[in-house]
Image: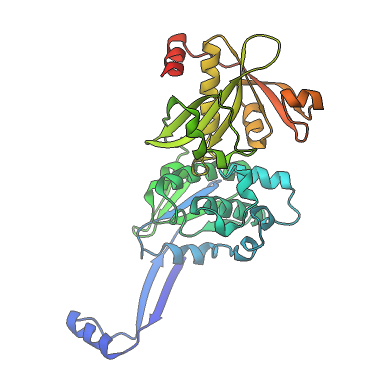
Length: 364
């Protein structure tokens, strides 16, 4: 496509002075042109990236080729986040989509969009675009990740890439930030400043190396507002903190199991801060602590009602379901699990941590 943008130039006294100072031609219009060829019909693709410096024509080219980013303002003003989604969309599908883009905080789903953090607003916008774009229509997101912290942008890009490919949709990110490319893992990249289009081989996103240590229960308040059930934490809990790039990102607490059978530790609370959800950090921390208990000779079990965690456990070789999602009897519920919501029970079956390493982590 040949794209031309012409803008009239007012012949004001100041314009004439600038022309004289810099020997600019006395033109009535300013013209910018691009010859763009994006061979997107050559291959099957799901994610594209248009990236370059400000003024290189990214937005203009994207709009001419694919149309503007959808206007979601009316939906986002409806009240709670969950109310912004299409009326015919089942709540379980809304929950699954919000969790998939890395916004797995049920208390925040009930709040209005305008009170959320910029990172949370970014995830909600992604989920809404995926939910409201008709099948077969490409999604274009201009100024992709421009308003969020760069670490948040990278994690959000990785979460988005996963769900877009799972849903078989096509998403085009338009941005001036090169740092999202490795995390978004696009199938193609177009750089307007160089008029350069390249297909990319699918690559793994960068590694996320977590530092994990045992902490006191006093670390819980940072994570408590983001737990999907309540803010309570048993003071007898053994707690662990995961950090990434010196930032706290996830918390996991475990308790002795009350009941008959082999000596057991059960998962009490596991929370990932909202900005870091969607790439499996919480599950990785949970798996690590469960392997610690296994290394010390304990059985590690977990009961959860969160759909995203249940899905992850069902697809994990480290966990085995021993109780399908169900309600507990009232007597059983007082001791073990909920009587008012579906919960599923899992047992850790992964490799135990070496004994020396497990002792070192527990005692540090």
